[in-house]
Figure (cartoon, rainbow, N blue to C red):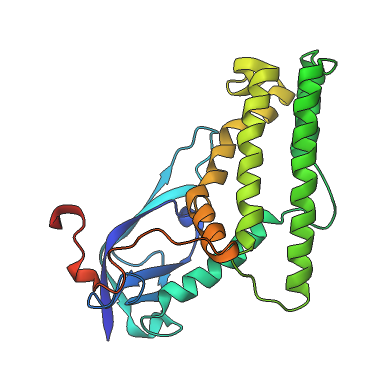
Length: 257
């Protein structure tokens, strides 16, 4: 009639202010690693659930660690089909990646470019030809991302379910942030990462820079996105997998090696 859950989850967004969470837990250890997983709805005030906010470098605390100690989850809290949780989670992630990768997709815009132009003007670097070339790189990248996002949104509006192509916009957004950090350091130096709170513009730039690292993790890491794109979009050969089809309880991982 119920499941007893033990474990730990890192990087749970807004868990500290949420009433409910979606829990994905292994329910059949005799199934291969991507099978035997089910999805449940979990009240965050259930006995045994402990949430610890993660204090981030940008001053925020919107990510969390969540610990589960003998948490009792009623069988009626099952979402979808038993042992189908991995497929359900993957479908949810595809929608999330489309949302992340297509923010502001109603038009072609370049928010990162605009922010860096302000920083270059404030630093007296806007006439530097090297800086101007770097700014145009960001402009071109953001324009391309907007066009891809608009195409993705149009496909969804037409009724098409998000597929692995949603990883393109999500990954490219992270790549833009990587380039943005390099350019911000070139323009503003240490001030791009350490700021005077009284400097409104400097604080805005620095907060964006130090907070941008989360883009490489949220919604799936850059490495995962590249694997998805290579495998399911480009049709490249998959990495060799020696545990395909092996029951989870027979995998040689961690202390079982």
